[in-house]
Length: 321
Figure (spheres, helix red, strand yellow):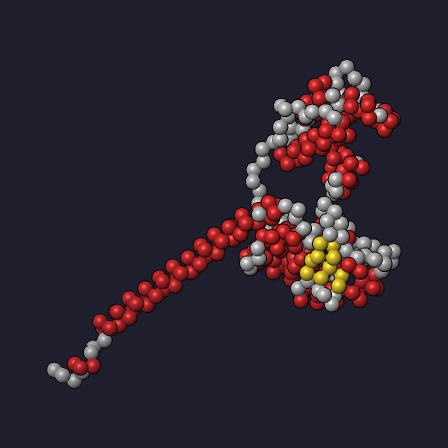
């Protein structure tokens, strides 16, 4: 775990690696007894290296038990095991390869859905709802970054916030819209009244404690229900995706979006081009349908005008027999 921290792996990655690797280490071969808790905790690096010898069949038995997992989860388990073997000085078996995954585009909400979510957050009895939704939608912050914000990280005069130790332990600046600043000013007196244990945290729950990612997701589920959206349709990351695609559609370049999102590689940001292409198709087909409707209406009016001309006597023939 210390190695993962040194490599700036996120806390979620560290937890995922730890849970997956324990199952691997505890996998038994036919001739072995079940590994006790004491044996597991007192195992030396030398004993672990011997136990994790790639050719003894342990890794194969372990991966066989992963066959029912989704490809992304399976690959995450393999990444953890590969990391462990590399640390122990072992070579990864060539026959164990990553599962193929289909290309999945980040989910986003359309304008109507987003409007319903914003309305639901504004009408919510929970005063933190509006500030959380607006801040995530207007800044692209990750849920962990929103929860980790301290009051001193926010500069109201500059209209910005400094995010410390984001994913990959990178610091960055995020900017606020006028709408976000209005929500912040409205939230500050509520925050002051809620403060109990944590004087630093910016977003507090009803108990006066720092808002946690799980609490934010429960909030999203509640707002989705109020907005009439299917369960799972609204997540903190969906708001982040909406922020990125909105910037792209309004002409922002990928490098700017990369910096605002805190992506270490622009390749990660480039996936939003795919979403923009989808939006482009929707806008194109909608515009084409509108044009065809207008042309059809114009053609119908032309026919009516022609019929009117044919049935109306000319002024030069009036009164002449």
